[in-house]
Each structure stands twice: as structure tokens, then as C-alpha cells.
Image (cartoon, rainbow, N blue to C red; front, side, top):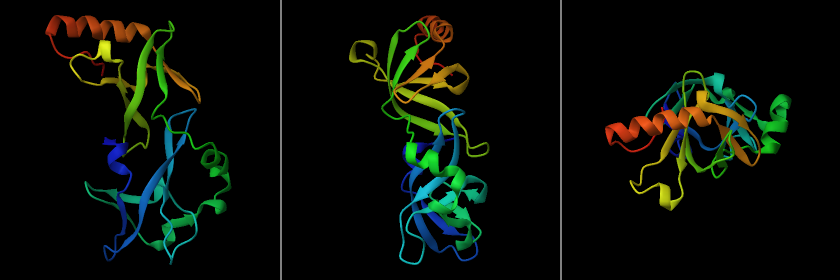
Length: 178
């Protein structure tokens, strides 16, 4: 898994000669199934105006870069018609409110991780209000606990948060859910 905050700004390199082609600027996420479909990249003079790389075209991920076979794996965003509504929607979970299915406010999404094998959003890191976060730790919520996602909020299961809260009370560890 990789934090999205670490993916943004990663260079895209060509596998054949390790030449830097562009840099990741935005993830193209589908809000219905929380799947990362593509990476929007910084425009480069020799590439197209709005370069985009489909996740299936990423050959390998490394700590400091992503590798593609060649320049041909980078397409113009306008040429991939099925992504047009998702690019226009520009869904980004960061900053969304997180509430439970019982309407209890949990906090706001601070960051999230992506599974680099399945290209799914895997966990969200929630910054809790000051009174609930004495330890300073973020609340970590797995995608299996997410019930619904809208353009304004993410709804999570109350019961899983309560059980992990009781567990953390017993162990004395910061309250987080996996």
C-alpha cells in the first residue's frame, strides 16, 4: 500500500532507459467503487497537453518512481472517453467529512492509501476533532468499513468503530481501526 500524499509528485520513468517522462499530479478515482483508474500527470513539451496514464499501463511501482514501458503508455485525457466524467468530477476523498451510519461525526479525511496491486483505495486516515485526538494519532479506517461515499462525506459502519474503540481501551493503544 502507498499513501496518496507520497504518490503525488512521483516521477514516471520509462522502463527502457529510466528517462523521466512526467510527474503524477492527480489520481483519477471512481467514487462508486473507490478504484483508481488512472493518473493525471504534469504536461511536458514532448507529451500531450493533459497526459494521463491508465493504471493497467504502470509496469512497476518503486519507492521513488513509477515505471511504464514507453511514452506510448501516456495518452491525452480527451482521447479516453470513458474517463471524461471522472476527470470532470475530480473526486478526491481528502477533506471529506467522515460520519458513521448512526450520523456521529468522526472527523475529516487527512490522507488515504492505495493498494498498488488492485488499484483500490484501501484505507482512509481520518483527522479527528481536537477533543477526541489527545494522542495525536489519526483514526485509520479500512475500505471494508465504508458504507457509502458521496461528494461531501464518507459514511462508515458505527459497529466496527465501537468494537475497535473498546479494544483500544483495553490495550491502551491509540484508537484506530484496521
